[in-house]
Image (cartoon, rainbow, N blue to C red; front, side, top):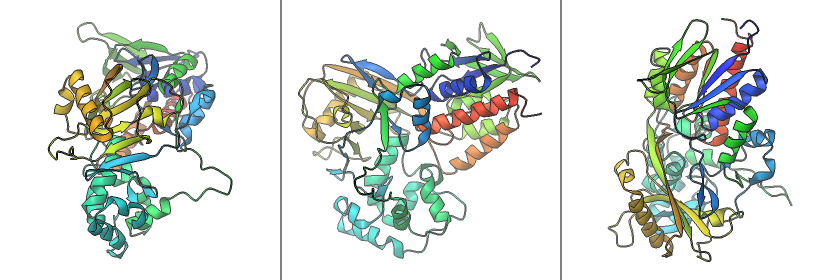
Length: 475
């Protein structure tokens, strides 16, 4: 680059893009030019903190896994450690087979480690199926992948899949257990099965954390930020000091032989940006389109990743409204009201004022709506969704109070589905990108949909592009 400061374009202004911009600044120094291009009118992607009855409230990702280090380390690095908060001791619950139960302990993503932990949620026949699972022929994946729902039903019968595993996976991926792959959604279980642990019950038992030492508390599983998770995005933009271009789609990405050119803006009046390196931190459909000419195999792999849409309905209820003494409730698919006719609209509720101690008055909660393929549900008006979610809340809890404020946040096509064979698709993507100089990919499509996983892909992408620009990668 002959003494000129390097210029990197980061396409996508979500947590992956901003974490990549921050890491690039750390690796390339203050002189580097870093441009973040985001097609929407704001930064943050699936992290969004809004005002709800005067309270800062998350209507996207509301927490991150604390025991995965990437998010906590980044928070410490940018000076937000004092803002980290953890959930209260309130327990989660699940509504299945017409009843609400506390979510059983000693399960891994709903896979039981023993029959005793789930017996209260199952019929006597269902419990017997769980108890007898280790006597079935050993599971042999032979390096292949299998749909989670299929495997659960084969080994445990339908009840564990429908009442536990599916609601949990629906909460994480907005997907269905019958469509999601074991290797991408439960890699730890798949690894144990590969090693010859032939039973799901035994594999889940091996995943259970050791009991805490005497007088020591078990570390918290989840964390959040008191000013909202998107305050991390705001701080990253501050410390990385990128040039931020909002409201501009990237239409075409071209390799010029010694660098890159991005065509951005409208087709009628395009603008061109030339740079030395590119990080693509965008959802699968956008990555497929942008890589079609440059890396056709990578583009095709992205094209096989389906995406789901969902909506968050946030409600602020009058001060003093009594919420159940639970952090929230997952709702199994196909559940109906006590009239046995009316289906639930929501797939989950988070009783935010119970789950997080830093919220004062008013009483706030959120309902999540939408699984993969439920497009008609999300075409309903905001008012209609609020009414349906309020009806669900009344059916589950008896709470009738009218909200003093509400927010409906729709996430269109934002949640990648980790289908059967997803790990192989990601391998194809990463191998193909490795052959393209100065280009890297990041985001929720790759190694996990949570905040720490996205940050890990951003760090890897930034390191790859920086190594190329600093001459450590010779082409």
